[in-house]
Figure 1 (cartoon, rainbow, N blue to C red):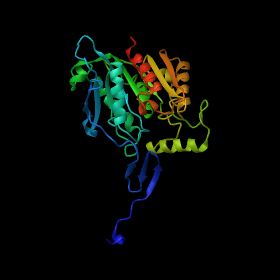
Figure 2 (tube, rainbow, N blue to C red):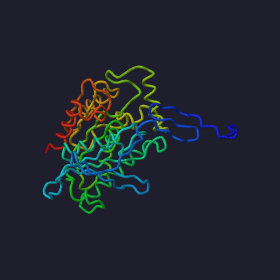
Figure 3 (cartoon, one colour):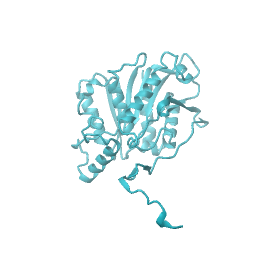
Figure 4 (cartoon, rainbow, N blue to C red):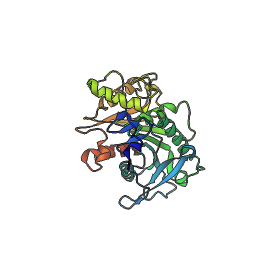
Length: 321
């Protein structure tokens, strides 16, 4: 073969390793998080799952999970809307890591879960992920009167006990969804609380004991700008929730924040918790720190002591009356 006639490979325009690369021809190569797993009945936990389209125009689905013995009409279960992480750019709701985690959480907490898939940056820049997640929340809420398109959601959840749970970038989305509720109240759909785990917030200036290393902070900003090219920077309200709005407007009664001692985002989580308490917000907030653990450790090792303890805290949060 005459290599002189072959088309030259596209050059890398932006390298955001170890997450993804963007080529000059517009192609995006995701370096991790590409595996998927189908929904199924899991015999170990007796949790069943299925995928349901919530946004036909964008071909987006949510994965629904129900635990065993959910057929008692007099005992409906808390509903958890789960938003996965991945820097807005990698992984998906149907990646094995997230499927296994939500499956285990549903079994242990005895809840109904809706794990939301959304469009990913950089092809679909932030705030596309936020808008998709809001569309999914409204789709879920359309079942509150028992007349929605999906039978599992019509029959099994208690819409007076709705929670939004997000990890990393998903925690960012969860926060913005609950901030949006006062502007667009969803009738018959009571969001009691949110769980924010290792949430992807950032800012131009360090907070607490956050790293001051210029190279580390530049790499985080680079990732953010790749996900949100139109951003004003790391003090954009989409990444820094302490700019442009007050946490007093958070429309839920309870918040549980999780941080990890060895996570770069640790101090942002503490800062969020402290600012929430100072804001005049009238709800109940708690923060839980996992000692000696890195970012999203609980997804990568479901059975380690710290992960088990964290799930127990979250399960208790969902089931408090």
